[in-house]
Length: 247
Image (tube, rainbow, N blue to C red):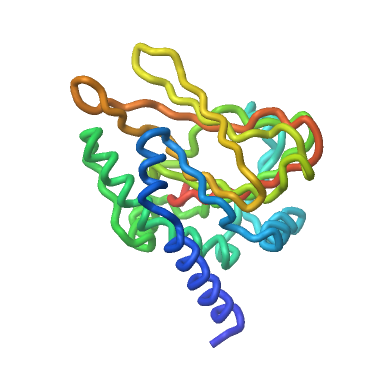
């Protein structure tokens, strides 16, 4: 057994323990009510520094995107290459079954036929069978004046409807501004905005595209987008865990 495989197994066990320790009844209730939920302290400060410190090292990444070149906002991000860092890979695997149960419940209520397997490896096989083979977890970096326009991370025909973002920097110390923002477009109504307060190491789970809302005649779909408000000073790093692979 190699040192890497031992490290990966330890990270996997650590991720499983962290996920199991969360209050999933409360998290699911928040997701159902607001389309987002916060897991406090998912990363330690040391882990935040370690992951953020990977950003300048190109060997960990498959591509680099400068947002302004594509009209996405200002700032930049890098997509990780496989194999993913052990901690991120472990959390991606451990979080998926809990979120797949939410996704399947939502699709049933929205009368959507798609169902997601309980095991993340089985879902990734579906992605790969569709030609979606590129890893989608990413590391984002913002400086003064940077922001991320409201968007949806879909990347192909198969898109998992929930996503996780983990803040790696400390608000008020490392940066000012840069709030995580979620908007919800409701049929025949004005859009609703949700600003999610996060501390370093906190993770936010959020709906990527649609979620069900109870109406007087049953459930209806609302459309969601997410982004980051303007950074006023400092530097902000975030890791995004997306559960489907892309093209």
